[in-house]
Image 1: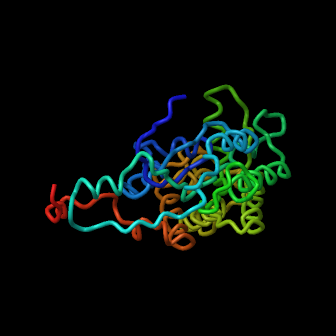
Image 2: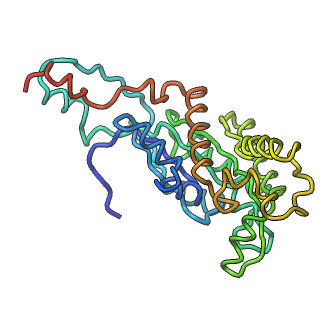
Length: 295
């Protein structure tokens, strides 16, 4: 495959399944698209979302996507850039295809496809799911890994909740029976959080955060969340709250993407302040500063 050999900023890699792939969709306010916009001229955000993939597929793909260890991945770049003088020299100093980019952050967002009925080809057991997440972390953090990158941060994101009635309605369009449950997805979300604690990796517990939002919305409407008897409710009542965050019971709506984007920005600010977009200068001088330079 042709590889772009020109200059790249340091990189944020968003790795996941369809929720990440669709995170680039402007019609849905895609969370990765919003992240790309936030880091414009600061870091390059790369979307590597693969619809339908689980952690067993993902760990194989990630090992090939990640760069192999190099001097750049092991050494932090510190360059003092002039604010005046030759503009050509400034550009040459700041932009060079020979200067390797550093992978600053990897977001790992999987589990929505692992959590499925056991007769599905996508199914991954909880034990294997846990091992797969650890394997992906070790690709980056273990010194003996060919992808070892001590300067790279990792952020785990748990799968979000699902609306069973909404997802069942979506599957009817394809002649498929309901194959997921919110209670099962919760278990995979819990394992994600456990792995984060065990490996000391910051984690967004998206399942619980979204469920808190959903419970609040449902309490405003019904007086209580009324989640215990949700199977007995009609579609409008059962989907209430869920349809604010999910477009089809599984994938994120505009509001869901906005919420996840906010959570990612907050977690980066809290755990990785050096790569908070507010703390990173734009590449090359602003246009009103160019007058300070000579040709």
